[in-house]
Image 1: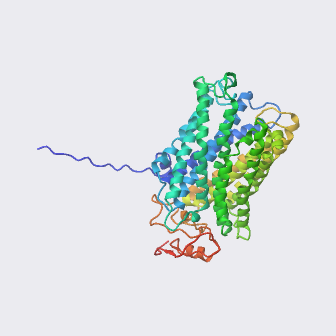
Image 2: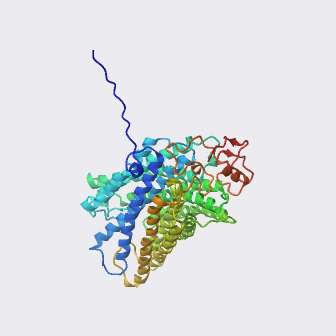
Image 3: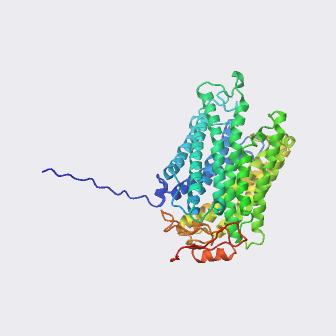
Length: 569
């Protein structure tokens, strides 16, 4: 008599340690750290390219570069990598790790889609870097036509550049859909829209910008590829095309992309400032709504990048909208200052980087108002003044906020504290190095030095030397951070569940959180920024198990306390 052998399931052991971050996973926390790790690798690589640029510019004559083409490659790849492979995915990593935890959920709405969105990035990065094997892109990170067309960029690296950005853009769109669905549909009982952490609000607004603007970049890249590979002439004036079409399409995406890189950083700042000042956030609703004001206005200011080529009648509307966007940004700045006023400020590494953001971003914003003025912009267009402004916004803003976020949430992600002394050394060197690097560029621009050149008039040498010294200090500054990271991961002080005594839900679970995030459905604080209030103190004392009705000082509303029997911490 024949016997039937039933197949038995074989349990495949799950990867542990660093191995789990190198394979496919649908755990949002693993995916978040994958984003952060990959982005940090590209930050180091893009930073190396920046150091080579500054070393070349130390003297007026060519020294390091073989020719101008090699220098063109450096600034093209540096700008593209830092924007599309560092800042954008790094902030997406924070969102992936934190948004489900802040909403008290086990994962994102679409875990598989979340993983797929991340795994589009490693091949995109490899395709970008592969350009060096076939002749890299040399048309700048903006890739204006005709420079990026087949006549002036005949090598295949420019084609790979466009394909790489296509993949990155698709990844961003998938991630944005996931964030929007998660935020709108997966808030826990007791958390209204007006009780969400401000980082979640910022991620929500950013996701809307991505959905609106990124398809325009995809369309422009498709037309670029057709011009390069299929012989079309969308952008070639010799055969009836229009090179300004590319500029309009590119900047319709790329100016909102500035806020894709800034709004999540502003969300990080709202969390860090309130927690480390031990003070309720000032103007919660204004900060939340101003993100959407920035998102809307950011989509109608793209023309200010083309003041030198726009029709004169079109300049004034774009000048006005560009100046108007300073209003919601100013709302945030004054709200953060109101939060700090009278607070019990703890000058932790996270707080220092957040304060660094405030000082540097103000300078970037003020110079942005200068560039919004048509006559000033025409004079300063394509000079080093623009380079200075751009870096004060994106490095002085986004990167300082990223480091604030890393110091703030590293204990939650790893279960260990970073060393504060090394963190403060990192901050001081970064602050000094950044200011020395980019502040002198304002004066180089005012004196007329154009950007994207590797030889220059000797009269600019002193300020360029100062900028190069600052860049070298910034390179040194990253060393204590890397040492701190390596040592703390192995032997750092145990963090505990809530080392900052914060009120948002990501701190109401273990550090690092278990795979399912929470052992039981968490109870959100009625006011997630109720520091220094009886309600906040009671919530912390209960270990996040009891949320009392909020008093009239706060932004939240509740009629009855939400209770859950307290258990051991």
